[in-house]
Length: 216
Image (cartoon, rainbow, N blue to C red; front, side):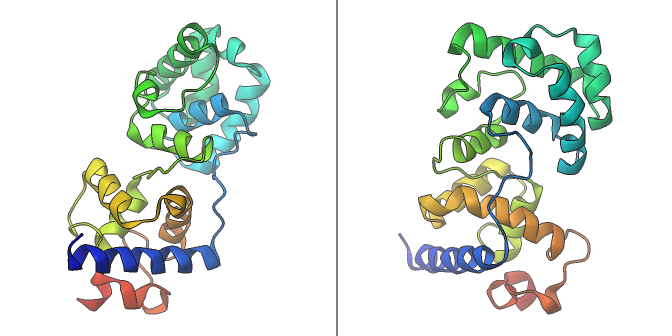
């Protein structure tokens, strides 16, 4: 590890510690402790707020309380329920197909590895990492828009880096494995409350002394 990488690793630990003092590591999606429900809700969350997804989750899981029920659902009825989350045609298709695959190929169990998770319809690295971190407690970086933006501002990646895989790999290098998943949940809260895209509250930010954006 180079001197620069060592410095960034030290900074990452400091950032993680400060975030831990202010934010919980609880997942914002209310999946009731059931892995397949987290898979469904994370697919619904694409280009949609967690708040809206959690609202839709109530009638959704009342209608389809089990994995089997979701896999056998009427696609048009499913679309009607999840329509408020947007992109409902594609999301409904992905949800039904992924639930069917869980039953047919994985014995009803959500996979615990990246390779198998990526086989599921509509699942990319972001969703897969969420599952690995929250369900299985494995090292995982969920590179969502907040994580990507703030990683650039803090100097963990180039300021204009938008590639989620590159951000994921950078943070994996700098953050301790046992901090990775929790860090991502906390950075989302920080991004919403303090370090927003358009109006970051730099003057009142508890990470200002570690931020490349502020220093500029």
